[in-house]
Image (tube, rainbow, N blue to C red; front, side, top):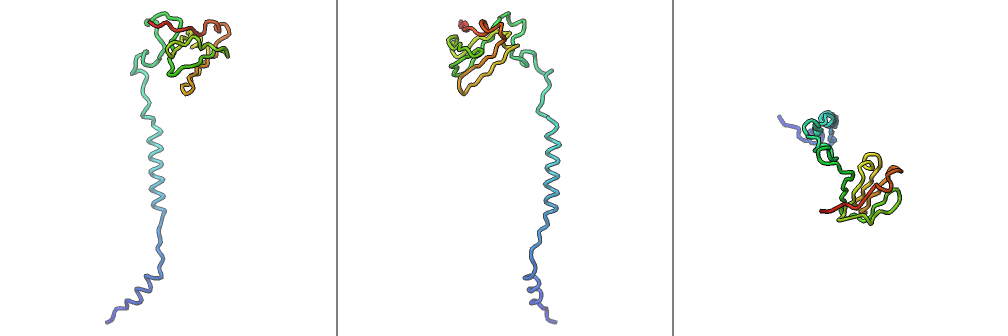
Length: 136
């Protein structure tokens, strides 16, 4: 009995490959759903109860002193403006002293790329908003 190999070769030559992408899409969507669920849990957030008040806030507490001014250092500080007025003459060693009420009630924009600090102070604090820091 002879085996007809020519018929088998013809059958293979006329077939086109068929790739089914449905299982691949199922796997991709399953991985995407898994990642969305895992990343939505926010494991990187920490409890603030684990830190002392000094670590949570950069503002001095009552036990650190009664200073009316905060020292704001900025690498390469060149200009300081308060409500549009130039106060650059008060810069000492790349820092400026800013009144505590200006920190609480005003707005301070620090730009290290240009070396500028722009301060919007309440109207009653414009004259005392900044001063030259005292270096010991």
